[in-house]
Image (cartoon, rainbow, N blue to C red):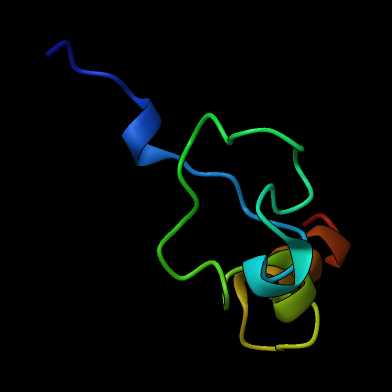
Length: 67
């Protein structure tokens, strides 16, 4: 088997998979990469309401003034 970088990245769904359905809002077909194991928690909708999430951190950093 040839080493491949795809296992080290995964799409982050917009909504929890249980709400978004099988294609998690990316596709009506099969996803080309597996979702993260904790996609129910690590999705944009869930992170948008969690001030301890990576999404909030990135938004705070992006809004910070440049030095």
